[in-house]
Image (cartoon, rainbow, N blue to C red):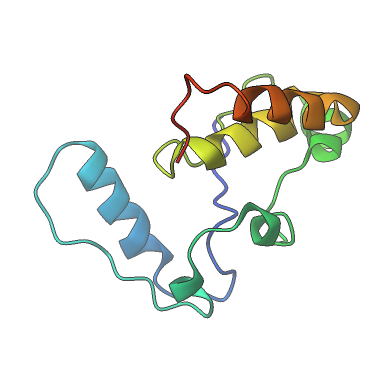
Length: 117
């Protein structure tokens, strides 16, 4: 079974299917126009802090207490094309214990060989 959840998407959206199809076509290399999201807050862009407030967000506790016990064992991190700084935040959230996140973030940001922005 594959469970797909887009925490970026506004739950009242009536255009999810068209958006998802457009993203899929682009991922397949098809030349097509960009889907223009008209949801409230779309102009603000993606914010992980906002995504975490979305009812569709699957957090660490959800994975540990609901999905893993139900037999789900593989999870795909959302947002691979959103930029390296956001990817860092996803990786820190899902793959680093909370008490070490700041230390890891500082080490990465202070490493002058990385180009995050």
